[in-house]
Image (cartoon, rainbow, N blue to C red; front, side):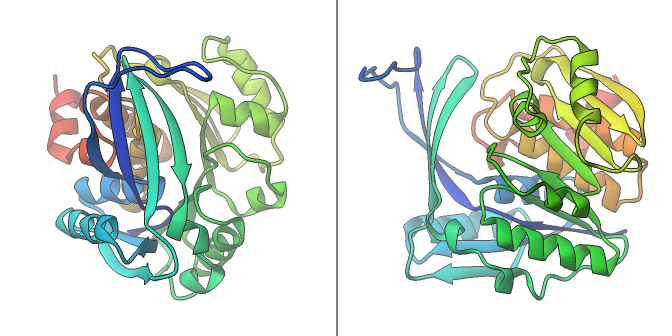
Length: 304
């Protein structure tokens, strides 16, 4: 069984539920304030670890109360933090999240995450059979160096290009599996997409990307499930009807569960189905990293 190695962000999420999201210049009353461990990198590492993978996280935290709490939480989840550096010159990453219904708006202050560099990933423990995962909450040079190291080692690479930003598409040449939502796909393919669009529109957008046919591209569509192009062949992953409470971290859960399945040697099509179930469980409870499901919870759904 391979390992899952994640290079990415580590944040404390400050979550305020409210009846609705405020408009520009408007103040609304929040019901309470919650502090949840999060950050896309941490979320993905926790998702993989809870599903039985040997998970290593590469990143940075500040020398502050949030940094100490984040380290304690991640250690308790079984995530290897050997390559997580304390960064005195910056505070720990923080996300300010307003939650209304099951939908969220998020403002991220990168803090120590913004200082992750190619040197941080230089000693990443990667080998053939491992899975390297990253996203866009750390600087692009670090991601590129991480994937170059993974490619040299023979590891599988998963990129979750979120939050959506402009980037050099040459990075896609280092990616084996691309996992993104409709907004991110639309930006990457330079086309307007909505979650309600016909599957054919998503497939056309995926086919327009500068990626080889032997790679996998998966667009996650929330309650509609997911749609993927696997070695040139379409795959529809049906959605699951659940009572969503908090969608924060659902995409990270999908990516982390997918990585765990691939590290275990499972086929990509089966891994995508499994990841979709994992994400559907995560949205039924509050918080990002704390909402990641266990293998037993997923097995219970699969055997119903």
